[in-house]
Image: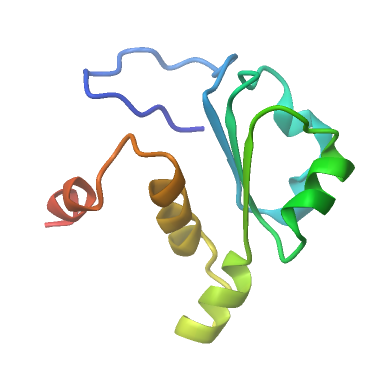
Length: 108
């Protein structure tokens, strides 16, 4: 799990009520990932499936859902399955807590 904040984070316990959940491993995309997620929360899943199909499979009715085939993107771009980077890009696009510029500054 990861916490994102513009303030120092001093809590190192499980996250019980996340505003967003990113599922990088598609085999973990089960209703369990929705536990505690805010009703208007954001779910980003690495999956080639259509968002409507994922909503039905996960019984996810109210929040935002984004599906990105991050494994395919990484295979095409890098020649190997490394879905974490495309998933980070997708999460930044739909969950505007951190700007791309801020992320680039952290890399330098």
